[in-house]
Length: 139
Image 1 (cartoon, one colour):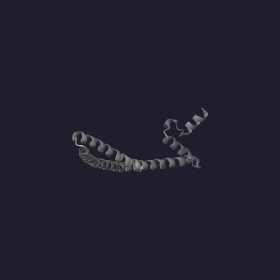
Image 2 (image 1 turned 90 degrees about the vertical axis):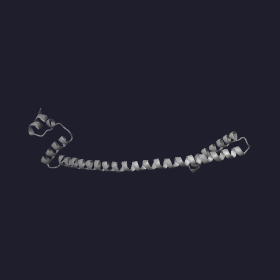
Image 3 (image 1 turned 180 degrees about the horizontal axis):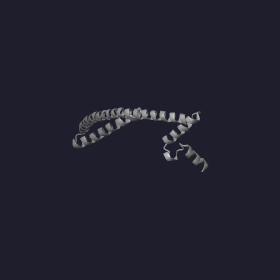
Image 4 (image 1 turned 180 degrees about the vertical axis):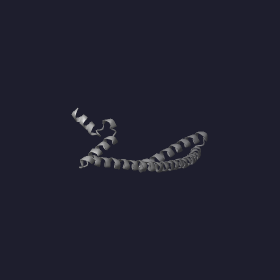
């Protein structure tokens, strides 16, 4: 991995060096001198631009991390609120479920009615009176 990263850094520098040597030789037709001057100017310009970009990238990354920290804090609060609501709802549901399956018949009947209503059964369909129970099973 380190080899690949180092290669990625060296390749642009090598390309800039070769290209600036070629341009320098073309502009200054003195053998070797044009290539050396072109290479020096090209490498200096490349390093200046790359360091400026690195600083800009670092600033962008820092701003991104700051925004992420703010969002993490915001979502952590919302997440905890949702967990608290879920715990409360689950506690209520389990207590209704416990009453619905109580060994005491009267408590189980009332718990079953409460459970049916809690689960969204229409009130007129819940067997909550003797008349409704008889009508349901005998009719």
